[in-house]
Image 1 (tube, helix red, strand yellow):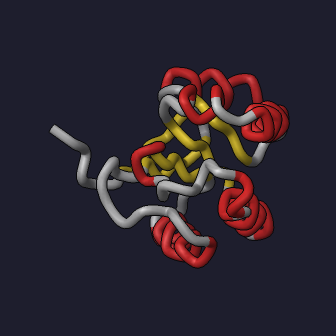
Image 2 (cartoon, one colour):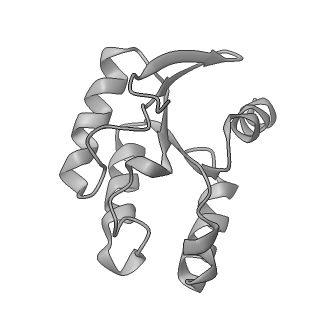
Length: 126
């Protein structure tokens, strides 16, 4: 059954808003405001957004959507993890592979396969 509710969870000392698998997509930069508002209303420090919530062009870096959305999250000091398998998109784009590798080096934006990988990232970031 698909997850249709967002949940506030804690991993270590980090409060995470786990976005539902279904809901309004993150497909244009203005959509980031809704995700930020939800995170703030829950007192979350990190947004966990499933790949299923990304708009169809989100991972196409030529649209600049991902960059603008992530810049907004960084500007507002909201950490973000994109949760899920993006291997097909990675196979088709060297630029996306480079982008993911670079963002995963930092502490603000991560692409992870699942919550187990997110737990490991959070544990190593503290």
